[in-house]
Length: 494
Image 1 (cartoon, rainbow, N blue to C red):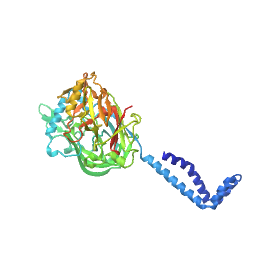
Image 2 (image 1 turned 180 degrees about the vertical axis):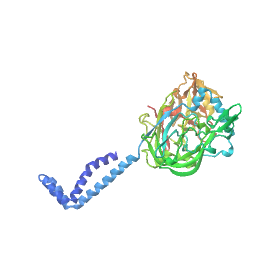
Image 3 (image 1 turned 30 degrees about the vertical axis):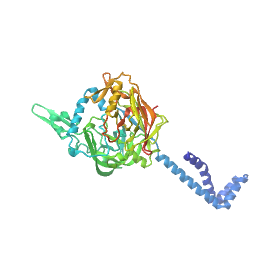
Image 4 (image 1 turned 120 degrees about the vertical axis):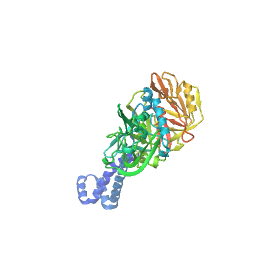
């Protein structure tokens, strides 16, 4: 509104001011010409005579003209620097769902358990966040780094706070993040396929150590004119491995190259020299953390927090809309809107609640129930775009599953139910308001007429949130993440 008023005033007053100033500075010539042209307009002559006799008036108009020009310039710069940007997502079928359908998930779970036991305590490093293995991720998007753009496919994760992508050195020599036993052909069956390859013959049996980085896009700092070396080391520990490397600084852009990108200069990010083996079979190159800086490893400012500090967004918040696509893979699956609300996909009526911790987007959930079962214990929960299911205390997830007739399978580590089951809605209460999650959001096709009931047992150990509200929740309701106000809002999807 202020901008519109200033603009109208500028276009109407500024030309008049300039005309008067010109009359003052070139008065004799200008007045004689004007006097000839306006000899029949006494009022016009009077204006000129007044200006001729009072140079202070002309000087005042001159200052006003310059001031208005400056104000309009500031307004235009403000509009150019603060804006709203949208970041398209791609919906994929998670690695876990693919492996369940293929019947290979039980073997993979055993492999993961083996890796957990095989990890040496000397190699562990405490970090400021708990990070999932991302095997169930379903929504991914492109970013670019450097000048010119280098494109990477990343998980947009509200459950973590660091950006990292593989460096060109990732997987070279001893930096490969594969267990040493993978170099023995007898133990390759225990390793990720990317970590070992071997040839067998009657006379020879050899194995070579490969890298989880082998098929990833890698950042080449030598090809970027805006890159600034940092060199500080970093490490993030995952359930079955880690990502390690060094820090660098460059321009990060949210969205596809050539599109309407959110451009964030001077962003510090991780250049991974080794990554956990479970990333090898995932399509993603890296992770884009969107949580608070207090959660970030080494207290590195997350890219979106950096954008807010630079005044690049209209508002210090972002909105997530995830589209329900069923069993379709590799299609457009939603939008992240940075700096404002998503009026295209989300209702304008948003219910906000305060965060209980500005690390994750953590808040209170009053109750949860389905069918005849309900629990009203009250818990701290987080909204997490990097988790495709809803996780909670096992005694409650078991009770929810029992209420709809789902059975837990120890071998697969998930709840199964007939896809045709009539389970009704899941009811969640937050801030005294009840929200309903439709059945289609929590029934995930696992093949052969069986569906996964999209809940999983989650033990926080008394530390951090007790529940994780993942994609089924965010598909049902747009989530508005308030980095500035430290709150979170929910709106119906349109």
